Image (tube, rainbow, N blue to C red; front, side, top):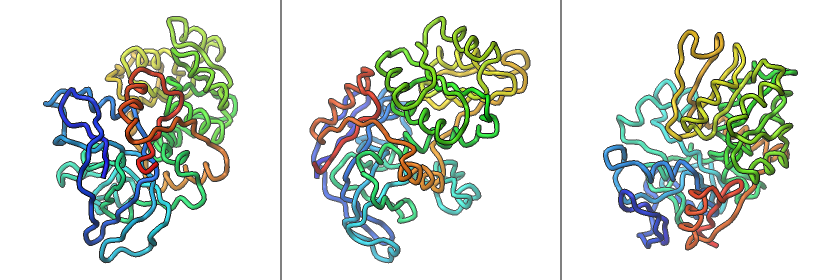
Length: 346
């Protein structure tokens, strides 16, 4: 089968031919309908050899949907041909966090060598994907798989971050979304669907700001030296009750600290390497700072239900599997509006 792999440190994604996988006991084989390209992949491909936590070559793609091609011995609850989404942050299934459905925070994954598809295990950017356990599958039903596949990360991750901030996002509050790209434009829609907050989107790209306006942002502000002043002006000098940074670079984490209100929340979601000083006087009083990772399986079900209800709709650009390196090139250059989706089987 064809697969898109990151093969050497510092290299570029390549389309290669690898053996077709076969499901063992308890496993499920998917014929991949769609796989998402993500900035997390770009981040991984920028790491030096001493930071890579898994061996190469690696088949990319931690966002995946497909139809069930074969069931391993002992698998029940699914049928061949069924359309499913893959819950990506695989865990051990038995530790305290996994028992809560929070496999994204599994306490033993590293110890046991368990890794998500596309981030250690072979990923979805291939004609077939081997899923380790049926509990990592969620039925798609009548959802469009191409528009649904980004929801497994670009929907789930902001949903998880926003859900924890809901007590702050009461009527009259303000939420700021820094970075209106793949995750950010979904976050704008989630905030509009889940809260009464005014939503302000920030980005350096006018095209992405226009996308933010189109999907529901009340205000769209260019993320430059005047952004903090503009947001303060829009909030009557108070700042935002919640700031979601989907870039995570040093300039944006610093900006988040300038935008947040007293007793507000900052979620640093992006992987841009930025940090935020926390301590008395470093931020307004009683500000909570978090760095969330992905979300729980039950939250993925909730995100898909929001999509099914028409509350969120991901802007996608599609590519054939042979065009996947081009998709990553465009993603790295900031030329993707919304999310890039690769269709491995056409």
